[in-house]
Image 1 (tube, rainbow, N blue to C red):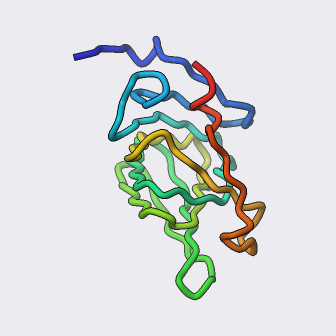
Image 2 (tube, rainbow, N blue to C red; image 1 turned 45 degrees about the vertical axis):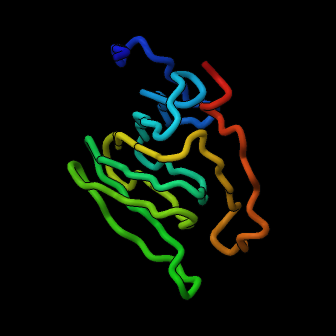
Length: 144
């Protein structure tokens, strides 16, 4: 087994103000092949870009509250509110966005399969899938 204390791991906002990201166990930095785990903290009002990826993703909300937005089958946008101790499951290729809509920091343990992640970002919800921009390697797979 390999043991790390969370305070020993690299933390950065990767140029995204209000975000703190730690790769707890990952492909690029720890040799993981099947899963990757992150600890992410979002300040109030901070959000992910609208995006999708081919991997499964699970958020376990440690503290705070927010809203997850998803592209519905009819092309509209659905939303789901979440709070501490909730779990969000994001299926492969689901266009989504996570927003801290609470008054305090939102912190989540995030697990993905099939690392490293290949993220397609959208400038807004009206963008078609074929117009999404591939971001690979993603920010936290570039830095140590």
